[in-house]
Length: 406
Ligand SMILES: *Cc1c(COP(=O)(O)O)cnc(C)c1O
Image 1 (cartoon, rainbow, N blue to C red):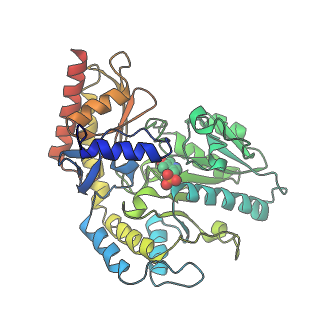
Image 2: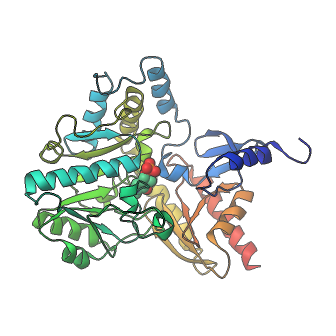
């Protein structure tokens, strides 16, 4: 133990044996409650990342933990070779929440995206009549949809992509937010447009207000599926159940993940109507863990939390408060603030500090946040955060900027 505390030892053993695909802040979390986490030395931090929105309802939400514990004692995994008594109620509730009628249950976000791609291709060949092997999908520059080989095939982030080819063909990327470019990229073999309603990993990039309605109009007119990847933007984060609600549009398919598992288990889904999801037949798609009873029980409780509108409302009102406070920092080391609801991308003046440096200074002050793309930091606290804690977090950011400006 000489010269090394527990946190240092834990970080050293992790670093010695884990592939170096992440560069975490030097905090070792031991426990968590609501919007707060506590490290191995007993220091508390306000969690302003919420596991990239997977913890929208806070750590250890009593109703989600109770649902998980009750199900742990009943049955946790059956595989889809048999029915389980949790799956039917889950998919029924999820379809209802989304205003659709069918669900493909999966586990991770990337699996939901992969499932959406397979489904769109199958729909294209079997319903739209695209010649075999010719389907294409239009995506947006700056996208982030996950880490599988097919998904990184249409990423334009060199770090995510380089060295991992050969890539899956069948995708075309156009500038995000540009409906005319999107329409121009669509041809007779286009089966889907796949976009994030707000680009999270790109830095909380919000498209022009006319964009999503234009995407809806174009895709409907040209008989192309509109797939909204709401894995990060959905389930309350932006002050609505889906960011598409804020834009007044209904996509053909929602891709959901992250918060759907309540921060307890990975749960993802493709949600749409039977005229699309119904094209898949027996044996054509699957997942050993997808739709497992533990996941279904937790996700059903997540949906119950969302069905009152309470969390969407918190996100809306607290989000307005957060954005007002952050906008007051523009010109004081902040160049721009973007976002919706309790989700903010903050561009720090790069001459002052990198996003990473700002996050490290915030950590010292007890606020955990995450940088993205150089000088942008993102705030996405759990929707259960109190107004006082939120104000305090922005005060810490103001203090960090003050410190940096000298
Ligand atoms: C996180 C994310 C994914 C991938 O989810 P995983 O669970 O990490 O596979 C896909 N799309 C968006 C928009 C995301 O934010």
